[in-house]
Length: 383
Image (cartoon, rainbow, N blue to C red):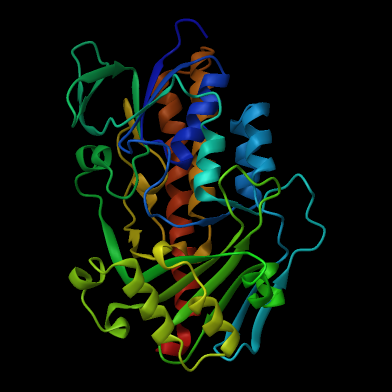
């Protein structure tokens, strides 16, 4: 759309890239600035659940080539979410029969990001960290980079995650809170030996195992429909507990090498079912890392303008609901629809941003509250 607004996006995560795909496909000029030096993600997790809302948003945002690549490299569909005692007695199970073959139930984070980057080589600038922004005398946005230099556009979208520099400047009163849980991620490469160790249910979807002493563990496989070069099928493992239950402060936990983090998981499950112990024992040592589980505090709407936010930058949520990525994708679909409407002359850019924020804010914070309730349920026995 010649003469349409130029959109600047801080962050090439899931939401930022989906937004860029939709706007580029709609003919708008887009520039994405990402602090990572390469497309390979930082330690954020491995397997991402994609729900019906996420699938719908992907169909809305992605052009055919990118959507096809994402679908082809997604995981073989699962049909189960279940929970168990630490001795593998099933507590709850929900099945999802008849999932259409073109639906996506889960993806590998790195492979997903590569798919979302399809066709965006000239749009995404890696190694450029947005430090802040200024509104020029002409009402445009100029972003400044930590590495030096600046860029101008008509709208800045902060999609730069939980530590968003854009949010800190736009909404200095917005905060995230530590919900008190730490998650130690790891994974086990699936080969001829380890494949036989995986319980049947764990091959069908996400399975949660918990004891009565404050430890929980999540497991789910990623078996690629079409495995990318250099990738391996794997079982994602997580161990979740409070800092108190882990028995060490954060300043120690986050400095531990991967082999020590794996050993924490092994020792935490010494009295669990042998099948669980084998999974941690055979997990790839160098894949373990910890994260702090956080959630954004609800805030009121603000005056819409040439800066807005998307995904974790505004509504960071715990992974317990498996909906963080899906909510970011919904944000991208909603925002792109409004911006393309503005580009067609159907409304002003400010009106488009206001319409997006009226939908995004309540949706995001209601989803956070649902995720927190799920976390309470998952750890109910530890109280």
